[in-house]
Length: 194
Image (cartoon, rainbow, N blue to C red; front, side, top):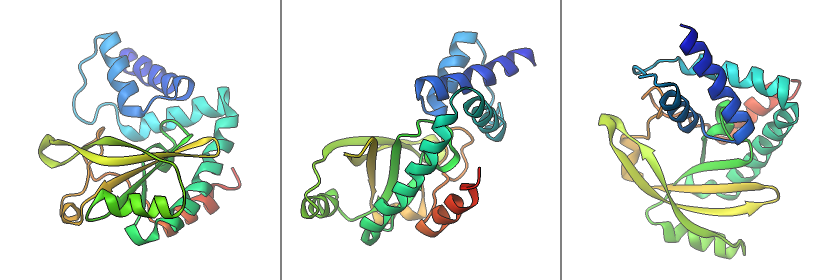
């Protein structure tokens, strides 16, 4: 039990201090501590609460940045409305870097999104994002990255046929948390007073 508490505390510190994604921090800390984790251990909600507590204590400015980037994500989603954007990643639960806006877009080809970026005169670079799927599959999806102020925006492009098998959460294996523009706006409004 003490090992698990230490693991959670160390993971929270790495996420906040080193701007690591929760799955990466969990994997690194478990390996360093020599802990073999069972699926669902530790509970994702417990880790997210520890991250929030650590952030409030040691990096309260990140809470403001998290809120601002969620607001910026709403604007980005409006820009890419034609591609049915969903916010995914650490801005959804505040469990990773707060300067990365990650949107999951639906498009037949990456070129459709590239043309949209070109029309907006937005410089971008091509990359890929590794997404987890049912059955333990990991697939690389095409992605485009660009800078928006102090934030990095990553557009992950998913073909429409993959909607029936959406990406999974790499921690618990359940459906990946993904917010629509309305859901994100409600979250921003709910957390504005904090």
